[in-house]
Length: 301
Image (cartoon, rainbow, N blue to C red; front, side):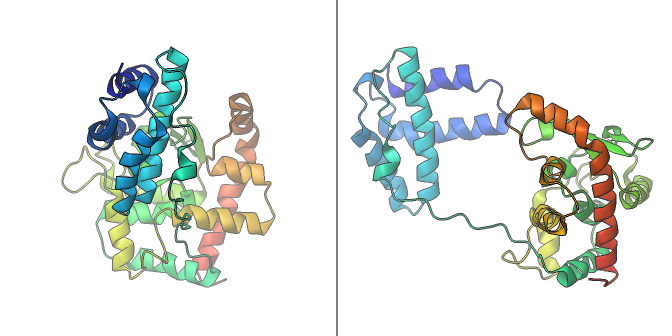
C-alpha cells in the first residue's frame, strides 16, 4: 500500500459528506502537491524525512501557510493508515516541530469607529451599481451573515409573515440550518428588492445569468470603488462590526450574540436548544441593531 493508495482510500471513505468544493481542493492538493514527491512510497516505510523534504520545497517558494495545510492533510492520511492497519505509526505526527512557523493571522479589516460606520452606510446608499450588488451591500450590515449565505439566498427561504429567514444547512459554514429574525428595515429593503428581482429565484442574480448569484468579488470591487482599501474594510468586516459593537453595548448576553453570528456550538444538543431559546431575544437584538445602524447613518454617533 503506497501513500497514494492509502490517501485515495481515505478520500473515498472519510470525505463523502464534505462539500464538493472541499473535496475538489483536497484532491487537487493530493495530485499536484503531495503525490509527486511521496505518492509512491509504501506507507509502512514512510518516514518524517520523506515528508519534510517535499514540504520544505513548498516553504522555499514562500508558501508557508500552504506547507502547513499540506502537513495537516498528510497527517490525517497517516492517522487513518495507523487505524486501518496499513502502518504502525503516524510518520507525520510531529512535523510542525521541524517546519517554519506559520505567519500570524492578520485580522480581517473592519471599520469600528461609529462615525466612519455611518459614512460607510451613506456611501453604500449613494454608490451607483447594479441592483443586486446595491441591495446585497445595503442588507449586509443589517444581517451580518457570511457572504455566501447572503449572495446565494433564494426567495422561498423567507417567511415574510413571521419575519424570519431560514438559511438551509448546506449553505452554512458549520452545516447547521440557521434562522435570522428580520428587522423592520430589512423587510422594507426586501420588498423593494422584490420589485426588481422578484422574477428570479435568487435575490441577487448576476447580470450575466439569472440562475447564478453575484460573486463576492463584485461586492469587494464595489467597496474598493468607494475608496475603501483592503486594509480598511472587507465584506467579512460587517460581521466584525456587529460582533464588536453588540458586545460593547453590554445589552445582550454573549451567547445570544454568538447565536446571531451563527458561530459553532460543539454540543449539538445545546446548539439546537440555544436556537430555540434565543430566537425572541435575537428578534430584539436584530431590531435594536438595525435602529442603531440607522442612527449612525443619520450621523447620530
